[in-house]
Length: 178
Image (cartoon, rainbow, N blue to C red):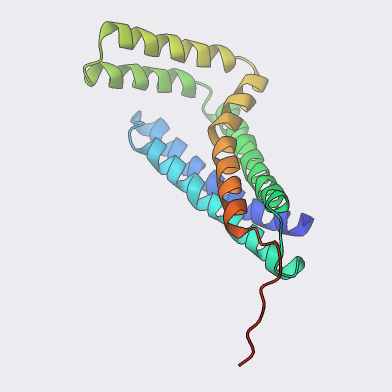
């Protein structure tokens, strides 16, 4: 199981971190966040498709075509955890070394977008308060780590659950002899 989890976790992690690096740099240079969130979450789903491949690979190659829901979820979750950890680690490096004012820029864009979309003063104030709470969490590396994990790991967990449901198999499929 360790080899499967490591290989597919690294593949998923490389995909998600490469797109995060590209997307964050493009957004950082243009100050336009519209569309980047959709691209980011779509990339996460593409990367997490390797949970399916990894679970199926483990079931078919190492477990004689049989896997319980719990074992399938465990394999998928650990793949997601490796990919998410890579994502968090790369974000920490990118944030602290190259984009230390990212949250301020992001907050400005969120508030500007709310104003341009015709949000009421109460809604804009709510956005300001929300961004202020994120800024408070971003004051420590632990806060940055927790918020970044909250961005990606729940998606990986849901994908692991779905893959486990779809790929579980209680007994080896019988082969039809002609």
